[in-house]
Image 1 (cartoon, rainbow, N blue to C red):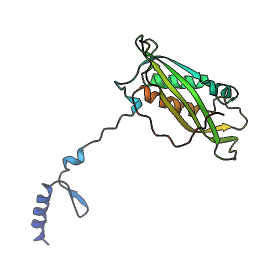
Image 2 (image 1 turned 90 degrees about the horizontal axis):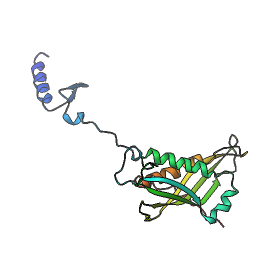
Image 3 (image 1 turned 45 degrees about the horizontal axis):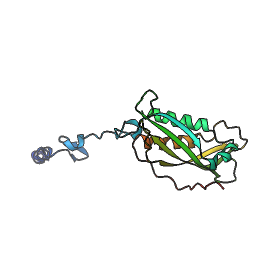
Image 4 (image 1 turned 90 degrees about the vertical axis):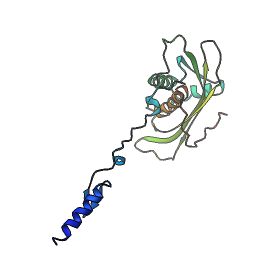
Length: 202
């Protein structure tokens, strides 16, 4: 047994120079440089300012004639809540600044809304539904030049009170629409949608 000790010590000494190894279940030697590399977290698009972003000083919301009459009769739709969600998102992206005289003006035209229950089951007084909201962003720069319109198709699964007592039942849908609008004006690509198709009004 005593004769094996010099051999083991020599082997440990050789392996220690090659980095960290394990002998008899215990680490031997120094850690390699590769194990000390740290990965920095990737910044989310909404956490940074893109130099290609489009600054706007005003945002207005309009309803196309094809959908205005329909939405006027739908108590679930709230144009004011939608506009508030959009403005809040744009401010968080630093692309909405009403004090910037050189910024553009943005108009968002809503042309479609669809709400389709997932099933006939009412769970805890709520109806789970797939919802979709579509429209276009139209931006006019400080010189009055219109930029190409950008289409938005937002989708969200919403929970709507069967009694109709919700003050803002489509809040999640508005947030998703605002997020896509923010992505566009901030210069970041939109995420692919889930495939829920909105049907045009008849």
